[in-house]
Length: 465
Ligand SMILES: Cc1ncc(C[n+]2csc(CCOP(=O)(O)OP(=O)(O)O)c2C)c(N)n1
Image (cartoon, rainbow, N blue to C red):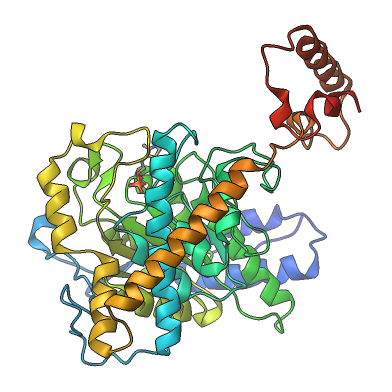
């Protein structure tokens, strides 16, 4: 057995040494160097050097905590709420005098049109669901700046994980209106082959992972993906630097996955930007019932993560903060950053919800009148002289026409072959699945008047291939 020199005053040394002796012998070079660098980091952070007569504690978990002879319980209420960064106020006027726009007029107009497109598509699809032409939909009214402006500060190669209310991220990155519609109508052009609920978009080409329904599962995945990016760059430093952006609502931040994700990203120094859309509600649960602390931002500090709170209805504040967050996330070999964007969910949670059962209409009307991210950017653009009423009218008409065109094309498209229901779980169909497929085929043959198989590509023939 390997002899280990132990310091009797340092139980940690014993723990570390025992742990090291259990490491399996052959470790690939890259993994070994990562482990070594993490261990070095760990050693520095946990070195206990309590000097005689020191005025502060040096426990591993509280490195510079001053001794105090006064018993005092901290009261959260004595700390002021973290500030909310703003560049442009509700009137479209610049309040951060250090701000200079880093985009050409055309580039701002493109992003403004993305926000408009999302809001117009949302209205049309919400109504389409009400008409029974779609099974489900979720709008992002009032939150268009959070998604479009954050996305605009990312690079194409960055990896994105969304919750479900970030259609602006997809739009900004190049998802077309047809891409949205094909997924919503679950037709044969939907890369997900119609297997997911509407609004659960995904795009391999745009580096956006497919949305999944269980809340917050995307967050530890995002930390893991960011760790993978970090390792990739350690293996090959010529790889372009990339970050992960992970979106979530303040309600999702009550899930255990949120805490696990932040802590692992902090301790492993992963280049991930956590972007919280704090829109005041998690379905019917208002933020006042969701938490007692200072929003989500205060939690970032608790995990040792650089954090900013921004006015989520201010396109420029969101863009500037995300730009800086990306820069920070790539510093020192990588680290997480948290952005909490304060906004308001103007519409119902989804088409399955009636929000007036739990909030007053006047509250919503008040928000709509007082603040709106699209109106705010429009005021700024008009003051700058690059936008006016005519351009607005024309843009709205064109977008509406394009949405309706993509809508009717996607609605007419056939559904994926029925056979796809059995595929893609196993490389080849298992005997069990083949049996089920045969049973379905004979069932459809026996009751031809009960099922409209004509809307599926190939009808029931796909089952007998
Ligand atoms: C693990 C889990 N629990 C509950 C739900 C049901 N659910 C879907 S959305 C939602 C509210 C989430 O609110 P928030 O994260 O604030 O996002 P918002 O809808 O406000 O954009 C809930 C409770 C779920 N999808 N997954």
